[in-house]
Length: 290
Image 1 (cartoon, helix red, strand yellow):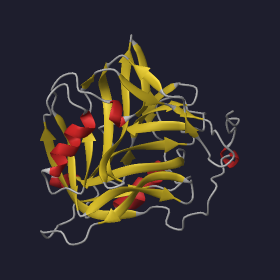
Image 2 (cartoon, one colour):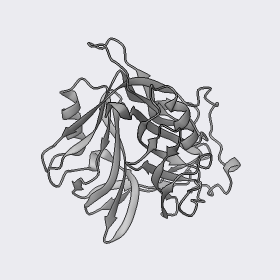
Image 3 (cartoon, one colour):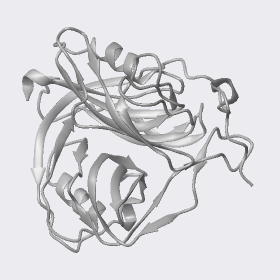
């Protein structure tokens, strides 16, 4: 039996000790990449084969436009035990779809390549947003994948004491064969840290105020500049392609999200009104390098 949904932010209690570093990050080099995997192959294997032939330590990929055979996914949901603040829904399935928007965070889990994927797609004219199970994804046809390969910093799955989830954590990478000139950083936000405010703070660690932002995660509600608020406090999100920190220190963070009732939301976040639920995994890149 699932626990009742939280009605206010103070209802959300994570089981472990509060992590002292609320905005952990690692500097690295992000290079634009693109590749075209063949059709009828598992997507995770195609990504693994591609990254193994490169010197990248992680990647953030735009999977928008990919056509998939039938696949499985989960949605945000209430906790199934007395410890976790939230959980996933029962596994759901799609007969296949073209992803309209999708982000993949690629890192290591138990030594193997793994992809954390949030996507938005239509099934029978109905929009869906969810967490795709990577081992269920088969490419229906060959399509170009683009994004950024990352050197000098990595996403590595590890137990998180605060939330008691296994999450991507950021790690530095030593002993690289070439000297890396950083132009980016990766970060995994701690619970309750505001997404927009955090991005602005993280951007201070880069050498320019014009920054592109990619990522995904979960929020405990959100208010938007241009849409009705998301009042549900358990959600999953993906950042849309126009996320930017501008030279005048203005931050534009458009997102898509789904709450635990399956309601879809879309809009530009109001600063200070989008607290992280479990974590948000982010890549910030100096736009002058693009």
